[in-house]
Image (cartoon, rainbow, N blue to C red; front, side):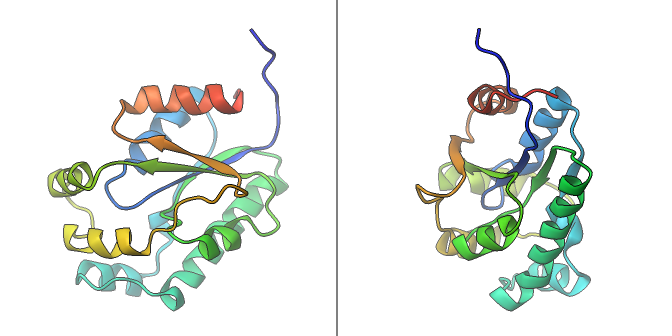
Length: 174
């Protein structure tokens, strides 16, 4: 078995609504014991209201939210604490904003067929994001590019298996 590297890492679990970001982050947190942030918790009330009304966010809506996520990552980096965060991070410019000045950021793009995503969204309760916004998220999605730090993962797998795959791929330890 190869030695595991200890390094400052921020895993940004990304993907469209219904891809399993929160569930996979929880599985990773169980294994790694790292601080977590549910990125949606940083949306200002006007963004939540807009999405709840079935209106997609635009770049201007997302900018302050993304800046808050980046600030949180920066605070963890300053404390030398590896961490986990969920964020849709749909477009390359959003990911660039998140990782600007944050060398620890590594994106884990959860990918699933649209039928699986729609089914998951229909089953969840109490979330402000209606299933009607899935199409707009898929239309905005820009998959990770080769030079971006990260990888894509099949989000149809069991969340525990996904977490194990990520930990193995990155040779992570708590």
